[in-house]
Image (cartoon, rainbow, N blue to C red; front, side, top):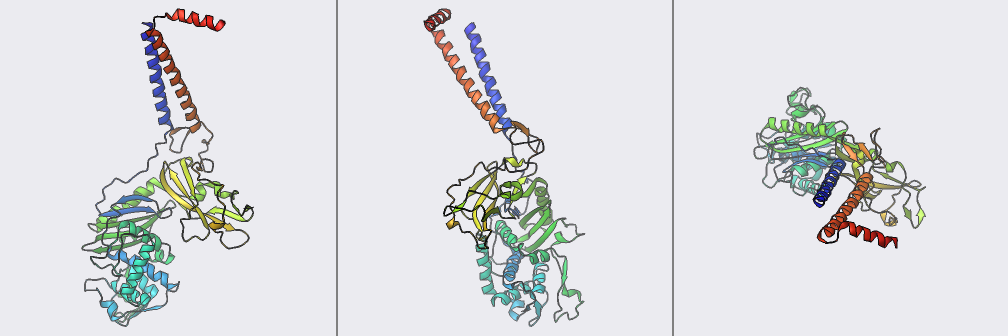
Length: 487
């Protein structure tokens, strides 16, 4: 009876330890949830990207090849802007080939005739607002001498932007079986286009009046005014979206209804691309729903505000054993962001340092920091090193970085903002979401106690088992041991 009672006590003790350890682990878990839009999307493909961090928030068939339709004109605009050198007053001549190649009666045009001329600026507005196909051809000839050579530039640029499933055949986007893109590639193209302020200015305009052409010689003729075909940017439209910063639509019978747009709310910039919607209403309603969901559930933060290590110079870098504390300023590029769900405690963000430069356009970059939240990649920044005494860059080949290691614990724990009632030294605290968090220190202590208790319980169990199976009375064994120790 006594033995059975003891076994029950040990069993209860073990069960209690198991329950406590489970509760401790569950209490420690932040249960970080990355909200994901689960509403119905009937478009063939869609993607949502944070412009500043390039983090993909939503992906629906984004790597499936589809027809771009007039979204191809975004790349056309990019090539023109790259070759304009900031001058948009140069005159573009409309050749007979420009107004006829791949253009039929149903094709959208500005109505130019051979010999007409418009400025590059006039053409860019007509290209992006009215989606004029004759303008696309004229710009191509103006920049490259021929449409064929211009298309080569389009494909070369797509490749350098990391587009792996995009191929252009013409600058207008008019249908060709061999002309295709993906939602993912188009998001990359739009992101690059948005680096040009004039693109953002044009793609967010409601209307524009270009210089008169021969068919409409009166400058006030309404035919010389182009209207934005993207209803999402037009206030008063049923499809208007507050916060929209740019939009380009496209449509052909085989492509369906496409849109590539950007919007800004709460200091967050999102890019959204939809391909192959069934109709105009679906195109706009789905992109607005995606924008709303991710603006409501996520935030984009500057890494400099998250990781305050960069408020101070890093002191453990040297060149040829010469301390560079006074001459080298180590910082993070100004525009890098992380994208995280709302209500997340910044102390949960961790980082890893890599001394491989991943920003080919930053001549000052000497490494990259990758940021993670619950093992999910949320953004990165290039570490910059600038000589304070001279403007030239510090090259990584001259840097002795052996004293630094990949920093798994370079969390924003010791560097970031916390609630006024939350400190990183607390054993138990609440995060921004109100969840109770047990610190790693306390969990380690609890784990040690649990392991020690289990060992004791196991030893007691074996001890009792041995005594139960022996013929030696417990009382006699106890007295024998006592006498032996006294000797």
